[in-house]
Length: 188
Length: 171
Image (cartoon, rainbow over all chains, first blue to last red; front, side, top):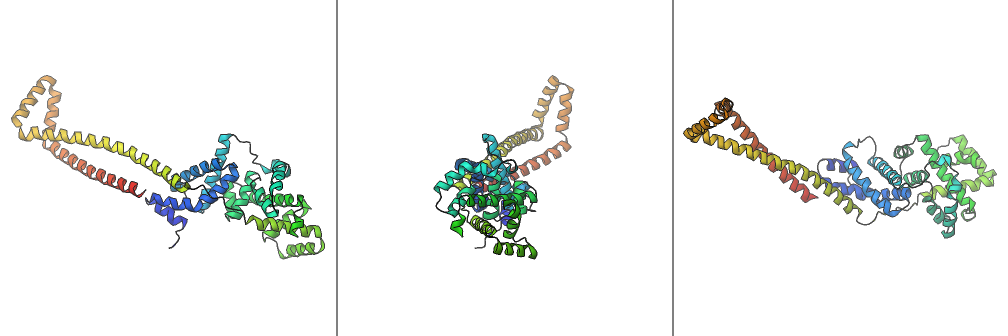
């Protein structure tokens, strides 16, 4: 059976087949949930925000202009819903990478993760969740969702240059952490 | 090391270097062990990040979201349904009044006249004027048209109710 494109599904929903929205939910719920877990660091909050994000997307479907991909538009909603959830709960999550010492920020978490990691890969993948929110999101959107730098910049509402810097910093940070624990000996 | 080569290595990973810069990287790999290690670890980071596991959304998420959407839709339809009921009742009242008027004017002319006379006695010339208007041909034509429009309204109302039922069935 032919897999319907996002735009075909949206067209059908707008024609009155509301239950076709389930196809979009099925298609994006896991990726959206991964993003929300990175933002909220809590599965229960992420689940609630996930539902809210899709309801918002459904309600705003009429206003979705097809000049960007549906996924980019949806992830922007997911990101903003995540941020709202953070501000509602008044969590103290540092958002601005430029103002903090990356390694210092991660120090406590890093030691915990290192103690429970089997190898370099395991350590690295666990550390993604411990990165500051925007860094983690840039990495996930780029590597997991295969979004381009331009699309990530739209989702995170950053300039192209800043998005690129954010992604580079995230990689540099992870590399520094690996080298700090001498994982290079395992890799070479 | 960090500041000096960070940008070069990142651009190398992203295939953004020109030929001269690629040659520079290759020469550094051959001559500088620290850079070689640095690049190898960076490549490892880049390749491993493609293995980020997808966190599956909890079971039943789709059903939960769709049920929330359906309940909102039902509320929306219920609201418009309420107004339709009010409009229908109003239509019925108008039709009943028109029917009664026609009945008095056409079938019980004597009685109607008596009633009108009595009414006129009590409520004065204003009511008499209204009575004259409603017993005129123009009024009959207009009320006939109004009746037709109301019937048409009934048809559309019935049709939209059928559509609502179908939509709810689909969901």
